Length: 76
Image 1 (tube, helix red, strand yellow):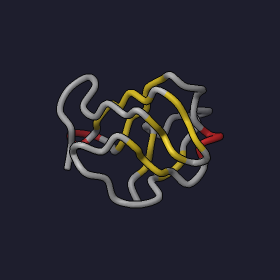
Image 2 (cartoon, helix red, strand yellow; image 1 turned 180 degrees about the horizontal axis):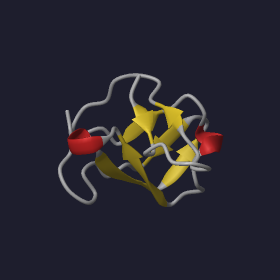
Image 3 (cartoon, rainbow, N blue to C red; image 1 turned 180 degrees about the vertical axis):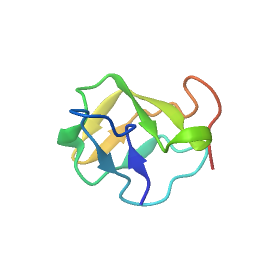
Image 4 (cartoon, rainbow, N blue to C red; image 1 turned 120 degrees about the vertical axis):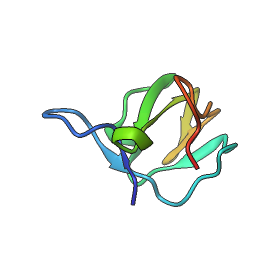
């Protein structure tokens, strides 16, 4: 599973609950309570495959109103 948020001491993290497309506007995660309140940003992946995603709201364990590649390129 792909990790959300670059792992650093005391940083919250969770994982994607499934695969996502480059045009996804909803992203399911295992535990949305580990992430900052919406609207906010989250980093998917690490290193050169990392991507910053903006999410507008949360519903259950889903990030809603997602903008992929918010600070760069959407990764596949």
